[in-house]
Length: 140
Image (tube, rainbow, N blue to C red; front, side, top):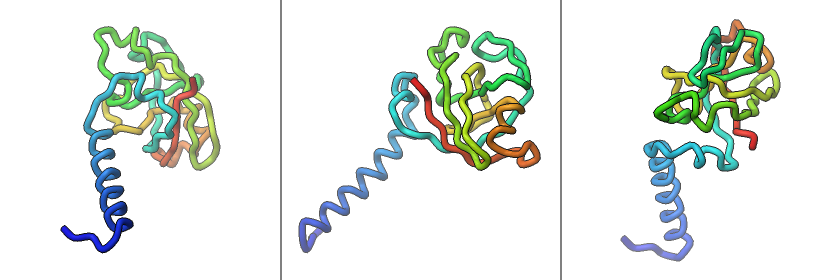
C-alpha cells in the first residue's frame, strides 16, 4: 500500500484504531472496575415494576432505582455482593436528568441500556413513550 504523505497514513491508522478499539470494548466482558472509568454510556431506557432485585434490595415503583443491563452488571457468584450494587448513576433523558441507585440486573437489556422504576422514568421522559434514548454514567 502506498501513501502519498504522512497525513494519509495517520488517517488510515487512526481509523483502524477506532474500529478495533470499538470491537474490543463491545466484545470484552470486563470486570466492574473498568466500567467506572469516566465516560458516558448511551442506550435505551425503559421502565419496570420493581420488587426484590438482584442486589437483594426490595424496591417500589416510587424509588429512584435502576436495573443495569446484564453485560455491565456482570456475573458474580452472589449477585447481592456485586460491586455495582448500590452505585449511583446519573441519567440524561429527553425530559431531564436524574440520579438513581443500582439495585437490579436487566437480563433483556442490551449493553448501555437501563431499566428504571416508573417514578425515575417519569423524571426523564413520559411513561407513554415506553423507551427513550439516554446517556448515563456512574457517579463515584
